[in-house]
Length: 362
Ligand code: COA
Image (cartoon, rainbow, N blue to C red; front, side):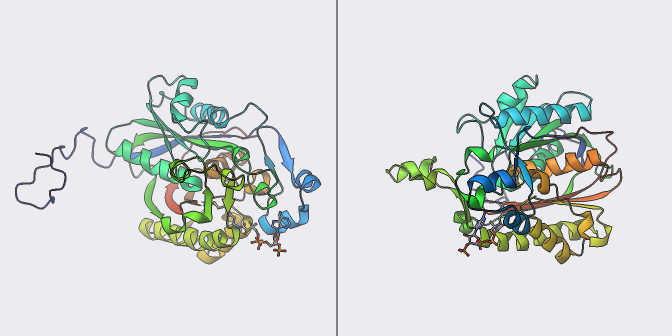
C-alpha cells in the first residue's frame, strides 16, 4: 500500500523513503563560489526610445531611474545570453564542473523542452541534471532555494544557477509603458556544497506567492488556458502586460516584508547590511524599500540605471556588476530579495565570499 494519503502521525506509518536517502551530512550548505553576468552589446538609450515612442528621457528617468538598457540582436535567444553568463561564472568559480544546471527564466528558448539542458550541453556539462525554474522576476531566488535544497540533500554537489531573460521577445515594442522598463541580460552564480558558517553560504530563505494577483503581470496567450478558451489570442494577449501602479504598490510592500523576515531570521539589523540587492525593478521602488527598512540608499544596488529591469537576470547581474566594481568585498553581509509576477517574492542572506576578480558583464 502506498504511504500517500496516510497521515504521518498514524501508528503504522512508515515512510517509504528513508529519512536520509543520500547519506547527506547534516548542515550541508550551498556556498556561492562564482559569479558572472553578460548583457548583449546593443545599447538602447532613453533618447532612442523617445525617438519612436510617445515618451521622453526625462519621463523615463524620473519615473524609473533607468537611463539605458541592452537588447539582443536578431538571432540571439535566452540560451545565448545564459551560456555567456554561465561561462563567466564557471571561470570565476574554477574547480570541478557542476553536476546540475538551473535556469530561472520567463522567456525560455521554446515552450518545450526546458532551456537548461541545452545550456548545460553548450557549456560542456554533459549529462548534468538540468531544468528551468519559472517564478518570473523572483526566479533567481527560487532557483537558489532549489539548488540549496538539492545540495543539502546530497542530490547535487555543485550547481550552476543562471537567471536569463530576453524581454524583447515578449514586450510589445510599441507599448511605451513596458518597452522603457525592460532590458535583456543574463547573470549566473556557482554554488558548491559547504558549511553553513563559511562565507558564501546561502541562508534564511523566505519564499512566498499570491496567485490571486496573477493578472497584474501576465502574458495571457500561449498556454493551455488560451487553448482551453478555443479562440485565437488578440495581439495584446500575446505580449507582456503589467498593471504598473498596482505592481508598484505590491513590490514596495512585499520586498520590504520579505527582506525584513530574512533579516529577522538571520538576526541581522538593517545597519548590519553592507549590500542590499533587491530585484532591479524601478529605482523609486528600491529607494522606498531601502528607506523603509532603514538601509542607506548607498548600500542598495541600483544597476538598473544601465540595464533596466532584466527579469530573472537582475539579481545575479547586479551581483556580478558590484563584484567587478569592488562594491562587494569579502565578508560583506548581503541580502538578496526578489519580487515578480505570480505574484512571487523571496529573499536570502549570505556573507560575500572571497572569489577573486570578476569580469565586467558588458
Ligand atoms: N512616457 C510618457 N508617459 C507615459 C509613459 C511613458 N513611457 N508610460 C505611461 N505614461 C503615461 C500614462 O499613460 C499616464 O498618462 P495619463 O495620466 O494621461 O493617463 C501617465 O503617464 C501616468 O501613468 P502611470 O502608469 O500612472 O505612471 P506611473 O507613475 O505609475 O509609472 C511605471 C509607470 C510602470 C513606471 C510604474 O507604475 C512602475 O514602475 N511600476 C512598477 C513596475 C515594475 O517594477 N515592474 C516590475 C515588477 S517585477
